[in-house]
Image (cartoon, rainbow, N blue to C red):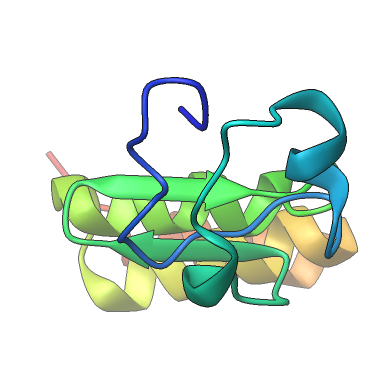
Length: 96
């Protein structure tokens, strides 16, 4: 993304300030870098190596895969692994 110039003028994140410059000298998006685990800007979702769960949540949210309460239950379960969150997730799913 940095090599293609996609990050030059859009909010994005990475593995830390200076990381993209190390691997892509042509990177010009430093002013748009956000120090967060994951960042969404319209149809662009970026994440650091530690932001994979939030990255997935943002993508699922953008795609409208789950209702908001299901998405929150999904995030709670996968961020904690606790069974009560799993059962809460199941309760939010449509019953056919």
